[in-house]
Length: 297
Length: 297
Image 1 (cartoon, rainbow over the protein chains, first blue to last red):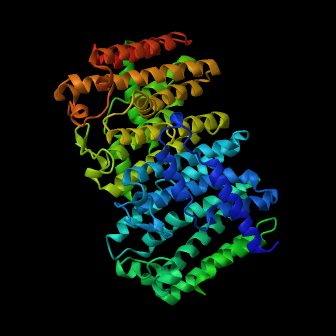
Image 2: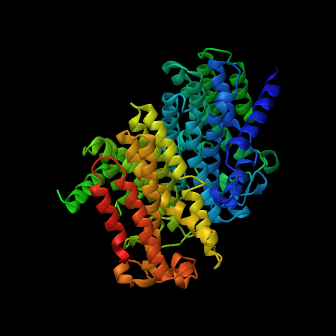
Image 3: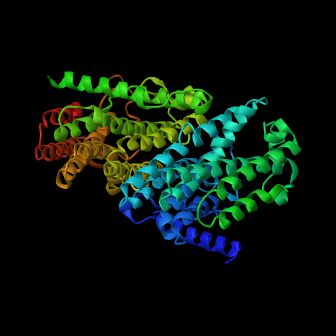
């Protein structure tokens, strides 16, 4: 099966699981329909489903191509990613009206509903991890990984630092690295580690997955900075040049376009190197990494 | 040891644990100081610490008076309670400037920081539950209980329904029951069940703890409605008469003062009855319930 067919099959399976594993309004016992509509509205807004695909693909390295066991964890990761986008779009944060061409949650519903839908998706992610309760050690490891990756020192710390950096035009390279390592790379790392944990990977392979995720996340973010500075809005699917206009510190601003491109390539190479040391058939993850990072070549 | 001494000792131990078990800014590796300052600002705003006291007191019924094992779970519950208050106070929700006489988180910091501090406290609660990782079955049970109680069908569903009810003046008795059962009682139930799980209670005792928590939570909320309608602002420590002024549906509005008082007493009696069926020395929990619900007699 070629890469694209396999990718599309996984995405289809993930879309179905997102529908099956996230609660719908079930009458008076489950509270108002509106909260569940808002959770589903944002979850079903599409997107590349990169993080859940990483969960399934990393699990496959250790336990073969059956994706079902990894689906609740993959959906949990997408719930956390979606919650972070909903809260990020709120007026007090980035104040975005559109995401992927549709009204953001607070524009479609209202601010309070969007706030609560984000809260509910974050909470639901942890509930989904108890689907692994038959293996309580695994559940505990997944909860720790997710709570760490999404916590105040990582995902949320990265968002906080990003907000602080927007208010000044002289963020340092170290501050920028912290933002990308945590706002972007933390959840990509957690996705690969989730797959490894579910597949039963040992400590050293979990370390390689973490390394691959960190470099892939950094590559991804540097590429976003390069694209914002070089692509037009049509290619990008969102407003180009926003960073420069906002005076925001980016890899391009700090290091120049050519250096930023080189740094993205370096991070990609390091991710690929970590993948090569893993057992199993890493062809799919390798091609996924190359596809994701090919956008600036 | 009398009730008040015991209560104060527990509160002191909880305050210390809140300080020890919630992260502080630790330099560049842990992200900006601001997010951790905001988490701690709201956590340390005081309050009765009712929910963590319930965790410790329920654990004691089964495992004796050593409170240390129950502290991480007690702090986790308080983190979730505090997150729900921070988000509830935001301009898009209740838009409150003061809580317990101090500026609310978004007034002290800003809206974005308050939003993220709430998110971080919710996430940190789940991380704290992995402190029980040596007993992964217990960890899994705690995660499921918390994610259920705080999720879209309970705490968050109750808040959503509360917002919807504020917009109309004809909420039904069933809608009002749903709000109180979930917005208030869910986390009180979870507190008692947490204690039971940590103490090693069996299924039938966990059921009694859940029943006691549900009735205590309902009594507590009905009493709040009665006090809002009858007490003056000084006694109350917050603006009295807010509900009637907002045209909000309350137990008092739906059933009248005298019936509301009687219903609070009924709920209290049911909570006490469930407590009496539990093993161990329930004197402290009984007195706590009586103290908490004595405010309208």
